Image (cartoon, rainbow, N blue to C red; front, side, top):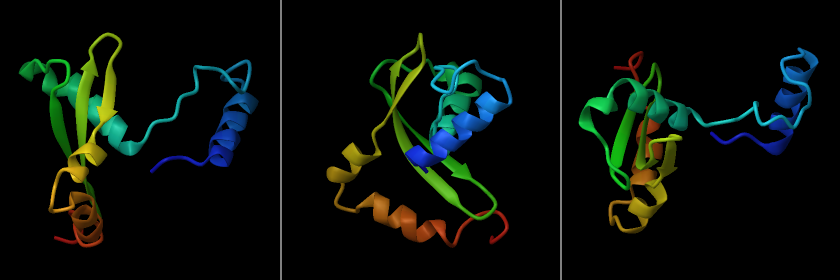
Amino acid sequence: MEYLEKDEAIMRERVHDAKLVRNKSSEKIQFITESEAAAIYCIKNELQKYNLSTGEPFIIVDCGESTIDITTHEFVENNPLQLSEITQKLVENNPLQLSEITTRVRDFCGSILI
């Protein structure tokens, strides 16, 4: 889920009010999606043993309590770590339209529902 600008502004203001940063537009405050956070975690903790190379795609399957999120990312660069979400590129070339399948399945999956 992407954050709306107004939501980011509210969170930036709260971080500033808590005196965690000097100004609201500080680069120390960054927002990422849950799927990006999962991808970064996997790269730093699990995928290192596979020695991903630049341009190599990988899939993250995040099985939560009530949802299963499937995202495809591309490994762009290691230092600093950069990822590119390539789901849209894959969907355009895929007659199965995975984005629609994921949306339908998402409401009915997860550890509390299985």
